[in-house]
Image 1 (cartoon, rainbow, N blue to C red):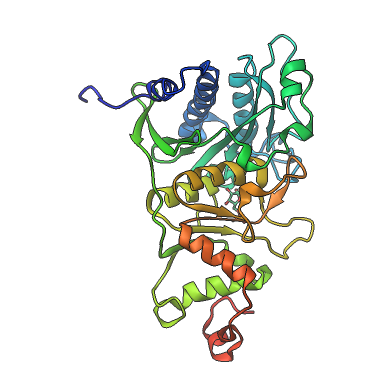
Image 2 (image 1 turned 30 degrees about the horizontal axis):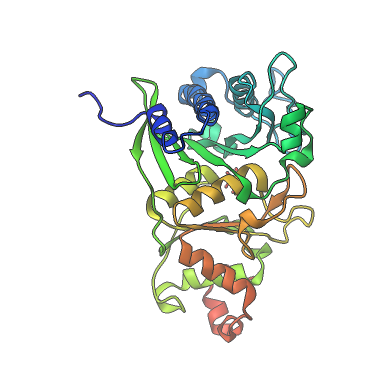
Length: 367
Ligand code: F6P
């Protein structure tokens, strides 16, 4: 292969930093540590069954037992390993005051042998983990917040409240997709840049500068098996997509569902589309499926920085004041005009057509 003319992630970050002469460079090394964690996870994922790391964590020789995380979800061996990789790659640097992740009940304290710093790292080490054992795309998501000043000054332990910052406070967010190629998508609040892992060099190379999401789309993604639990505005939206050319939208739609949010987010970044995991009535204790701090906020930041939109259906997701570390939320993101339409459906009265029995009969998802 000829020598690549592309920037590496390191070069990209250094060149970006030159625009801010006062910057210390700390932030760059934090992102490089997160990227290194992703590269390490990508290697294990790529070995699949050969890694000996597929299946549930903590099971006995007969496959019984197994550990469950704070969300009540069965942990895969790779969930636990990926969590450890993120911790080990990031705890030593002196840049972090604490970490929080999907796989840990509470904040992770930086061990006493390392200095503490002014940032907080929040992550979902392996998203879409039901896809692991079937060789489908999974990914890692991370979000960087500033530690409260008083915490950074005192070096005290991190507490849950330190992490409860709205998504608008994020200083960076990214995800790695472990698909046919490993990619890293990153925003530091100045657009979204995409990097492809060069397996020969082990480097992320800038391949997708300043990604923009088309404002319109004919592609939607939702888990239709939940349709009987959807609220009326979501039913209306999906019914209209299904009605296609013959309905209110006047155009046909296509549907996709990978069950790996990182993979859906990536498709939408590349060619537009809309993703919905809305608030529903399935389980009154869970007002949504996805987690605000380490799933919705970082993906929302990336979407908005690429010209898309990210919402709860009712308000911008990044405006939500988090109430707990593992808070779940309804989440809708993607092409701007489509997300705005869904938000509008949540505020305006349902149109008469929705009560029309003829329309109802033609809808696949009507109860
Ligand atoms: O962590 C949540 C997640 O795995 C997402 O990546 C994905 O979009 C969703 O769950 C899939 O949910 P379901 O199993 O309902 O399709």
